[in-house]
Amino acid sequence: MNQFNLPMIGKKAEDDAKKKDNDVYKDFEGKLKKITEIRIYLKQNFQKSDLDDVFIKKLENEYANQYLEKICLPSTKFNITKLLKVKPFDSCDFQLTIDEIRNKNVKALHIFPNTEPAKKGSTGLNQQ
Image (cartoon, rainbow, N blue to C red; front, side, top):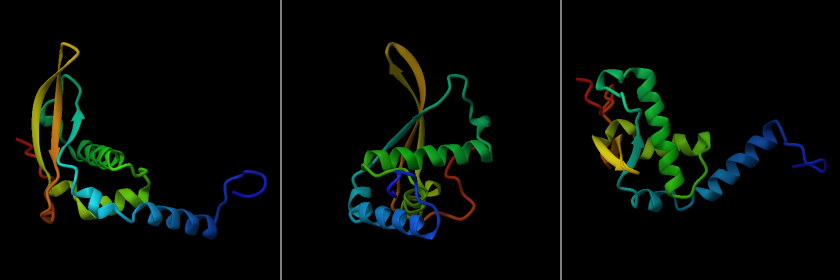
């Protein structure tokens, strides 16, 4: 920030943002191993047929955001990209369940991150 408290723009601002992300990223690998499940609640009328490319991309983004939140890192583009390289959405296992929250049944997608590399062209979700 400059003396007028305005956000910086340009190369220096980008460098400062990357440095900040790198500082926070120091123990990223160690924290990643601690997360065994991410849970995303779905709309009540969700069907497996709703799984198109746009919806899967939204799930991937929510997975990355929740993962980073659980390991106390900001959901920046830099961190999301790094996370998805190390713990790709495509290599996760998934389970669709009905959870009870406040006496209501809610559909939930449980995502179990794997350590295996992602298979190209696979979402890991069964679209049947």
